[in-house]
Every structure is written in C-alpha cells, then in structure tokens.
Image 1 (cartoon, rainbow, N blue to C red):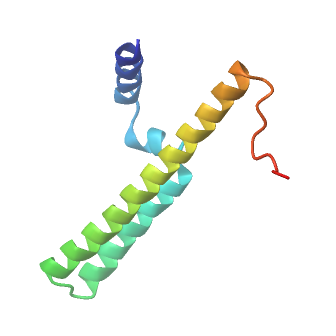
Image 2 (cartoon, rainbow, N blue to C red):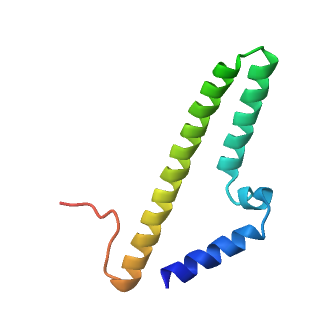
Image 3 (cartoon, rainbow, N blue to C red):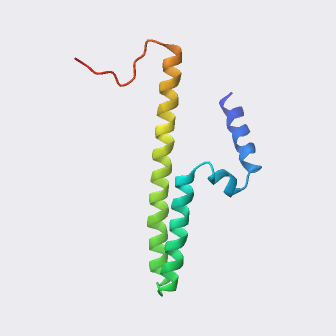
Length: 97
C-alpha cells in the first residue's frame, strides 16, 4: 500500500510545475530566491568560481536542513493526530504534576 501511495504522489508531482509545487511551500520558495539573489550578487561583485561554489553549497545545505526539519515536524504532527484518533484519551503536551 505504501509503495502505491508513494507512486501516486510522485505522479501528481510530475504534472505540476516547480512554481506550482513551491507555491505550497512559501518559506522554501523565499529561501530559493535568497540563494539565487546571493549568487547573482556574488557574481556581480566578482566572486571566483570557487567562492560562488562554496556559497552555493553552504546555502543549499542550509535549505536541505530546513526542508528535513519541516518534514520531521509534519511527520510528527501526523503521527500525533493518528494516535489521537486511535486513542481519543491521548492528551498532547500534558503538564505533569
């Protein structure tokens, strides 16, 4: 079942443009714009290829970490919601005495 759902998700993404997909993730879109802006500024200021590459790698790594953090938070929220449906008495973030 998981493989089927994964294939369906991949197929739905193929029919969308990158702009359509990024419109659902405004923070990621803004971060991508900052990366492009930074690269254009570096090139305009005479950065060497090595400097531009190092800057791009650092910023893309930062973007990757942010994406994985967002994914992990969403996964956690889905897990909590599923657990609350299975066990309605589950209390999230309860205060211990």
